[in-house]
Length: 531
Image (cartoon, rainbow, N blue to C red):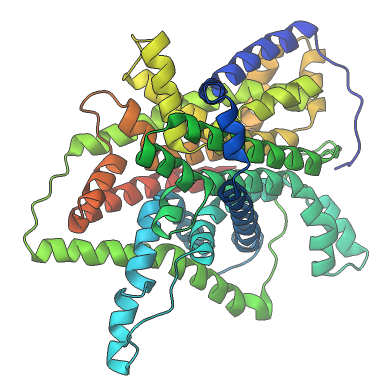
């Protein structure tokens, strides 16, 4: 393992040219929503500048930035210890804990926020249980801290997933050398392990901060004024898409600033093994007297992130069963969810690979710009991405409008950064000397990629596909606006039942959605045990 720039012999230039063209075309597709926003904003003229200078716009901007930073910091404080405990220690039931702590990724933010309100709100289940004790009303959970807490509970799994992949690929030689020199476990973690996790932490943090900026469900239900809520209200109250486009562009500017900060945090260090030899797993760390505090920490996180939503869903499911509720859910909707999520995961991984390979193996200002451009869609609310593709599809590609292909493209625009983050973390840990050795033996560049790079990249591929699969299961605005006629998913069933206050009918599709997510997590864990 070295932390310096290595001068390696570059392969022939034509593979880099092909990668640059391919990645550039992908980036152009990913910025289609940005083109839509620029077009709409140009129609506003001087009114756009007037809206930017309003005090309310400044409050929304600072409030959204503060929310994103708070959620990211909280997710790091939750996710990093959980990833370390479930990967490197003898935590009892580590595999079970891992499955439980990843479940919040399968819960839509609007369902999670509703569950929190239903259980912990001023008129929730807990307050009803405490009424015999004379407690008539619990403190308000609405506003900044309610929204931040909810987003932390559904954002920390992005940190866990990225950090676990990095921890499993770390070279244990450095830690063993430090331990032989008398370093304590805490010193080894802060001086050796944590610096090597910087790419994974940066990738996970970037996903969390963009998730916090683009979320609509939690901030709306918990009544916090953020960009997404302001954009939605702009559309709904005045049907003024130009004003909403101005706010969306400001959101893009905030996201670009965060992307630049993340790029600077990477530095120029390299995180792959510099020595020859077979990769091996690090020794398991004994928790000792910290076993019970670790178990309590995991239990508290699972209580708020998993048990609360499950209790709310289960309560309404039981209410529906007891009342003889007729379930309107069709199995075709469940199949549509699985089909769309699987296709989105496959297409997104295929689009992410050339972008990541170009940015990591051929670093330059151009390749960095191409990679950063692919993050635009993830920073935007789903409704903006959907409306942008509706505009381009209806006006320039009418044959593709309201087809499954356009819907899959919308998913790719929204969730490509999730796949890029996982692939980048894994590719940074693959020594390019291995690829150079394959080329020196007469292998073509594409043969080297297929026989060397892709097999070593498998953990990142599966992690990225799992992220996209889970996110697609929950995606709502794109499915509502771009789905083919009669195409319904579990997410649309949940939304339709919730908006019509049919909470008992919301419970069943929500439960099926969680079961589908559990299946993908089981495959992810099975693959980890094989690698």
